[in-house]
Amino acid sequence: MADNTNTSWDRLPGTSDPKLKKIDRLAEKEGLSSPKKHREITPAYLGRNLVGNYASVNGLKLYYEIYGTGTPLVLLHGGVGASEMFEPVLPKLAESRQVITVHLQTHGWTADIDRPLRFESMADDIAELIKHLGIEKADIMGYSLGGGVSLQTVIRHPNLIRKLVVISTPVKRDGWYPEVLESMAQMGPDTAKTMKETPLYQLYPETDWELLFIKIGDLLRQDYDWSKDAAVIKSPIMLIFADADAVRTAHIMEFFTLLGGGQRDAGLDGSLRPNAQLAILPGTTHYNILSFPELAALITAFLDSLKPEPM
Image (cartoon, rainbow, N blue to C red; front, side):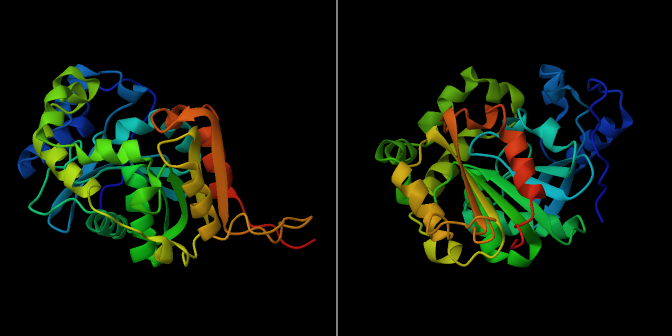
């Protein structure tokens, strides 16, 4: 069983904290990137003590952090960044549940291993992490790249997932707008050269950015269509998209319909509604959707909801 010590929100991080020294020693022992530099650069990061752990899964030293108590919720970040993406929603979500943030392969403080980046293998990593933590079933939420990983997790390991939230992610590759696919196709070593000018470089200075962009570019050029698998997902699922998303509007409705949504009236008492829910957030894009003011409340309401019984 892993050390599930929760981070606290009552004071700023400091390198004198014994828990912080523990994770730094663990990272050094494993030959991994340490969060120490991150704390020195951004001491007020999320206004909390930064305490994380590494789990050995599938040959990978997977970095994760745990906040709060209650029903477990695993958060999976988008491409290139890591758990910092969830700053806008993490504190609110952690008020009522145990939130587990993960740094996927090659991202943040999870170093790379000798295997390509694939949605399926990253999903298997998450499944092993859930087992490593001794969790019987968890909710899972993924944004963009992480949304693809979360979908594959419930497809490949349905017995481990209770509910699923997918944010700004298509169920097949051509669900992205053509210009987005074109941009994905161009990702590679040259893209990495621009990272030194970004806040992400300061957050994760030990990341091998060239390798990350080579691998993520290769991943995003792979064709996929998970429609058949998604259509038989039994877990309740919530789709969240921006009203000006990078995912085609027609595909959003196709995805929702695939999950049983939008096919009939739910009835006066709502008892005929499908397992799937859909939220389109006004005034947002693929790139700022996680900052929508009511996002945490929407997610919490879905995760806490029960399907209404007939009147």
